[in-house]
Image (cartoon, rainbow over all chains, first blue to last red; front, top):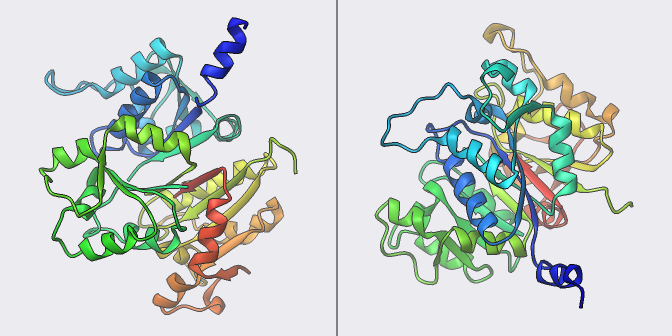
Length: 133
Length: 97
Length: 122
């Protein structure tokens, strides 16, 4: 039995997941739940393809946040997840423009894109989960 | 289809709306402030019992713990984020924000 | 229908203007419409207010978007479902709505929801 075939069998129950995050950090638990879910999914061997940030969710992608030392750093967590697990962190351009989020202040591993990309994410993944208020 | 509810039923009509659309056998998962719905003995306990006649009902344990909810309505199962992932693996998702 | 066409349902659940969710939801729908997916929109709860006739947002300095709902037809978004209970409990009838919709019972909307690949609430 070839390795590739074996890998296909072993991964047959794995799903590809896209996440739509519609609330900003700290104000609402949505960004935390989305992160904890993504972390657990990756640990179980599923693929988290992308986190698409919409509405106030785009505020997750600014590198200007500076929470107190004893609090979680939500922006850093997304950045690490992007680098370590190849999860695309994508902020909607129209929503970003409304809220002052630009390429200049984007977290490492994050980028700005259009709603067409969200449509692609919906098409190419097995699941699209929404987190928000 | 997995239905998730993340708002307190005391604050939002999300749970009552969701329950009207849930199909027989569809699992329902309470997360975030949604978990207040399954605290045993509140005014939604009967609704949770009725829902369980046709749907399995889950609540995210870390959210229950964070809110000091130690006794949940009979039949409601506490699960972790890994259990949430298992439900998503098995079902498409409908998040009643 | 082709394999790569997904069934995507947008669920409008909030009243317009008081928050941006309905408006940005509509922007999302308009972009997705260009991708030739199998789109539908369900109006549930306060979401039915988005379709109310005679909305005049001039006094609150916000862009009205009721007309955009009327234009969805031109984007080939033709499946508009309104939850009968939500409409009735708000004292509204189909005559109060801007566009032609399918007025459906919760069970039927629920059945159509379970057929979807993706459901997004706004």
